[in-house]
Picture 1: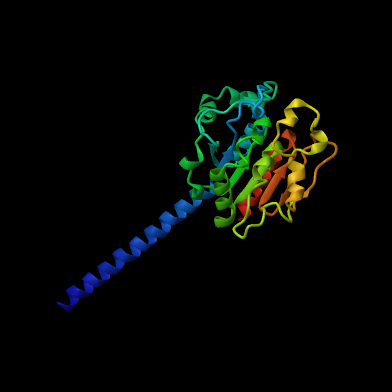
Picture 2: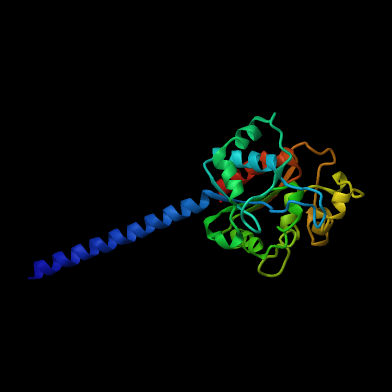
Length: 261
């Protein structure tokens, strides 16, 4: 009888150990999956503000980063304020990377069916990347759902926030849990006023100057006066690039930083 009881206890202990190991294994898988997912934030805006002037997301700023992430083994998802199709522009088919993605039906389908913030689970991601283009100035920065996702990734999960060009507009309103602006005390980059045509009709529709608002909120805005020279800045887990030439470099820095986290 005692032997039978002992055998039952040993078997029960074995099952408990297996269950614990399985839980640990599942947790590892979940963590690994989260660390392998990056969320790309884009805009639904088809026009500059309330004007009839067309605008769009900058295609090369999306695909040059996407290509780096994909080659590094990451899975990307797209989110926009409203979900659904987004406008794309600034397309150069002489660029082999742009051309390849432009004719990739699976990829283009992703841009046609972006998710809305309420469809996303922020805990699935270890990094976010704000794409640029004139469209990035509208609808993204003040979207509460996107703000919440970005800050959960950054604060709760110790992840990365990255931007390119006008995509930096998306982070100007972000605040930490203590009410401090994300950019406060940090080196930040984006498309600078020096390269904007402030007298042009397109610029007059902008809700704010990226550079000026970052400075007002305590950020150390730095940029290259040369421009289109692959300029970007990494300040801890905040990584920002100036213009399309830096999209791939921002993505590579995101990958490098993720591998150290």
